[in-house]
Image (tube, rainbow, N blue to C red; front, top):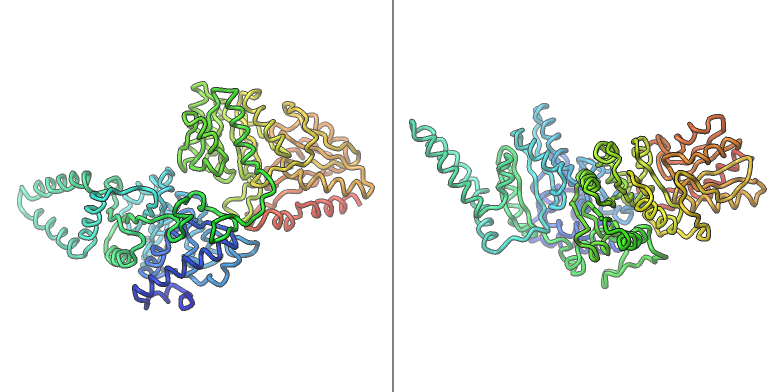
Length: 613
């Protein structure tokens, strides 16, 4: 590894040296990710594939685009960022995803699934129009193939007749020995240059025969297609206009390098099917790839996490609450978009398998599917991360809210997500949900209120409703304050005069101690828990008109957020916004980012005293 500081350094290495390099990279990944946390299993599975790609292509002139980016760590190591790896996903350190501002080798910023082929096709069209000469490869995982955007891009690319290479990294699909052996044999034949030249010569010869030539050529093609349906995987891709090759062993460097070398001479859209083992080389990750997909710090020998967990997360509380509600309401069903574990739905899936639906990485479909379930008399709960919910905006607006359907959206990872950075921060849902008619939005201040809000959403609110909560340990702040959920009313936590702080959801963890500190300094400040982000709590807006200064704290961007909407309702008062600025927030821990943006206890006290003092 010490000899490789750029892709150019790979060019002179032998296959034996590349095998050694791959082993060293696996050890390096384990050592570092165990200290920083990150995406482990997916990266262990693509070591040889990444090495072979950079051996065959000339980055950054050639463009390699990683779908999602979960598997881009080896790419970062080979492109000069090995020395920074100790800062991975930490404040001001390396991003856990491809980031073009970080390196010219990162051709496209990716963080959400199923986008790589669309981006790669855009690069190809730009290259062709500008008469430039470089290769474009998109690496797509089989999980991303459940996203509809992939098929829109494949359909477009197949018709575009441009030179594009799509690499399907398959670490899930099983291949039977017989069919797999035939497919691999055919792959070896079909990628060889002599096969391609002979195929072209036969087509030309047949077409030159008067009358019968074209007819014979068509018969041969139809027979070949029939055999492909029986023997060769990938007919779907060929019908979409791609030349399909594979499957290739994704851990056989010699085979990968020969394949890439041969494919460089093929014109038009090409799809290469590569079979890999997720978590390759680390027994625990191979046995439990889902568990080791994204990890916190852990002990390499045992695989056990080293981080100290201080309690249940909001996600776990949600999962337990849903189980309890499902016992009382037989029409309650749950939907996830390929994340049953991360959204807390595994216990629900185990207990109520017929009432559980995993639709794959297809958030838009999940919401319209939920709308259909609601029309059919069920009560669907869609559990989804805030940043992924963005992909379903049209379906929420047109299919759920236009019909005013009883669909419940559990918005997990709302607010700061931390180490995953810009593409995953849940800082926009209050803005893009709040302006949709018929939508109600709730935000709990602690674990008890989360449970109460879902009970309200299931049994008392028969229309579209979203409950948002963060990625963190479920707070016990103000645990003795558990007033019933009253429709469209806020909670008065502390009553004062002259100035008031309104806190949204889990920001109460910072708001309550900040107000307590300010009150100790002699300022008789009020504290409110918004509860209902939309519609605006009516009595709260009336109360706020009696204060000279109103402070509004939320873990959302200010633009279009709760604060701006509340400000419009209490015109005449001095309103001070405490929210995130109108830009994308970098990666770092929740505590670090709250401090940097002045939204922690210290920052709140400082801001309020500056105004009040």
